[in-house]
Image (tube, rainbow, N blue to C red):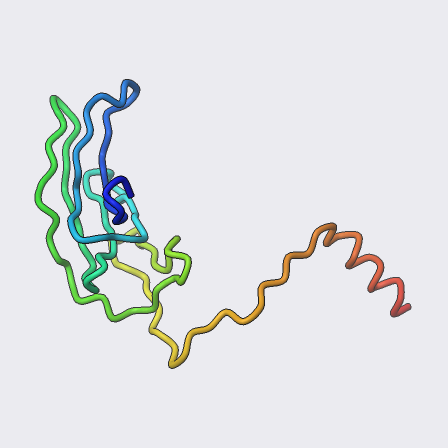
Length: 122
């Protein structure tokens, strides 16, 4: 988010001297293709996008292209709410009428708590 908007960049490894911007207009939920020659991402303007690239003999990135309109459920934390199957198909959920996360419970020492609860029931 160097520009204030989340974008996709590809950098050379290990020196990190070569850096190229892949996307424009904001993105989330990045995934590499199984073949490793494309990056998939969700654009902020509700499109599922793909950008092809090659790394040798030099880094070349193709223009991002829209694959389809993105009307599927999105992860509110923008980490990933879709997957790519072995056959290259996208696995995506349908949106719910009113998505909400009301409460998130974090349980530390879950195993001990579970043992305590089981012992109390016996």
